[in-house]
Each structure stands twice: as structure tokens, then as C-alpha cells.
Image (cartoon, rainbow, N blue to C red; front, top):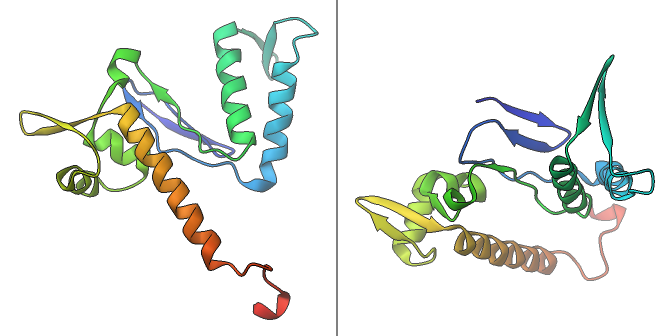
Length: 163
């Protein structure tokens, strides 16, 4: 179950694993958007090949669709996480999966649950979280952070003398 980093993307080989979301650095987004444009352009036909040395592999349509989705999101600056597993297994997440998704510690996730910030249910003594609730929380927190950061910067921007 290896995890590989390739130009800002994290891909997990394990089942039912949520990989910590990553963001493509601004200087690489242009390249990622170019990938999205090439993948989206099916005027040459719907087939794509992966080349590695002398090896050629045809990419299945499902993988091309996934690549296009990831490239479009990453190219526009969104965080990208790849989740591997059955869809029905993704409806409910463990506290560790939530921690990985939010890039926080598992005890912090439990603390959020106990405070009522993150809706959950108990299965025995284990917390289970609805994926939609977690993603909604992540979106709210991201917007809140952006507002706070925007409020910290001067309205007219920074000048070289500020540094």
C-alpha cells in the first residue's frame, strides 16, 4: 500500500483510504491546465496512450475521465484528494480518515465531534462521520480562513518597503 507524490498529487494504493488533500503550486497550475485541455480535446478521438520508454498502454475511458476531473480541479487551484474504495464505503468515514482529509490530528477530530462541530454517530466506542458533513465542514473552514487572511492583508497590497 504505497503512497506516491507526483507534482503535487497524492495517490494511494490502499482500499478505503482518504489521502491528505494536496494543492498544486501556482507555478505548476498552468501545466496542469494544459493537461486538462489536452484530455478534454477529443477531436483526435477518445483514445489516449500512456508512454513510458518503449511501453505503450491505452488508457480506459474511466481513467481519462478521472484524469480530466483531477486536472481541472487542480489547475484551478482546488485541493485534490484521491479516495480509493467502494462508493458505499465512502459514505461513512472513520475519525482517522476525517483527520487525513482535513489534515489535522485524529484527537482533534474527536474533539470537534464531542463539541458538536462535526456531526457524527457512535458505533460502539468509535466515531463515524458522514462524508458529506465532513466535506461541508471543510468548505466552511476554508472560506472562513480565506476571509481571515484577506482581512489581514492591506487593502492596497504590500510594497517592497513592507519587507
